[in-house]
Image 1 (spheres, rainbow, N blue to C red):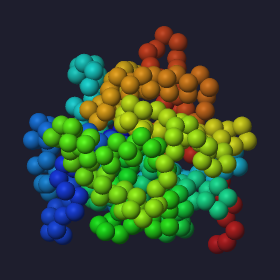
Image 2 (cartoon, rainbow, N blue to C red):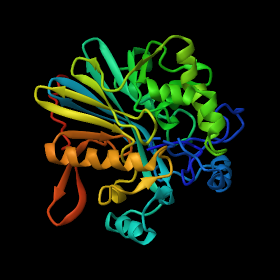
Image 3 (tube, rainbow, N blue to C red):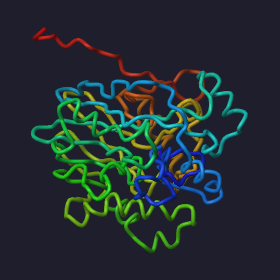
Image 4 (tube, rainbow, N blue to C red):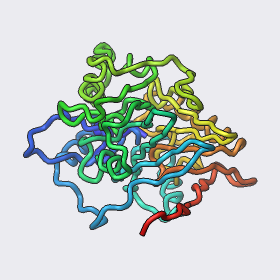
Length: 356
């Protein structure tokens, strides 16, 4: 989704306020401009910005969870990584009847605000350590920004990441690139669709954007701008092979250059979905439901309908950025039932211990 602190209903995603704050200023709470995601509305802002600046809500947990899950796609090692979770008000959903929305939430035994995951993924291909999305950084409060610590915990610290593939530039996906003036991934090349980069880096687009969306452009400049200046950003044009077994698939709608990444090995396939799905309990049964973070809601809904249908028909794995962690599974359609059912990947912990 879009985790723009500027989006209405996001408890702390793309913030409308400046990213760089004095140490004494409280941290924001969050949620995607973009889950994952960068679209904020000024009026909603009136109710959102003050909340983001207020003291964070109490955490539901008193200790951290495991933040990674290892699995394979064919011969390729993949690790799901958790940047944390953040409350997301379901009022950000659009093109949905509130009563129907609330009924779907009740069927899933959840209530608003939902605890939205912010997931990233690590892929090892040869000498490349490839990160799909970069987390949220400090933008959305203390329950997020866990990605760097998780990477260190699995023995792949941020300095060892060679490549970062951004599904889009909403700052719940790109905010983790920078920690103040420090590049968190100093040895990485950032890959992104050329349309996405051009859109967020163009001051004319910021000038034309609604007042509530303007901060997203400033956030993009602060978070990805230093990598551009350092010559560490490589753009691609639509569907492009990037690494052996890994290619991009253009899916514009949520943002102008939103991109899926397709990983294939030994007959197995996993598609990293980015922000095609934000609140599964509502959008899986009804893919026509959109979200205020969408740049083009109609196009985003069409992309979701195609993606859901293809995944259900072909049976490959998918990894939405805001699905409950580890966020990897299959979609299944059922005769006589609208929409789709999520079938999470089976948990496996069968590694043989070599020492005691």
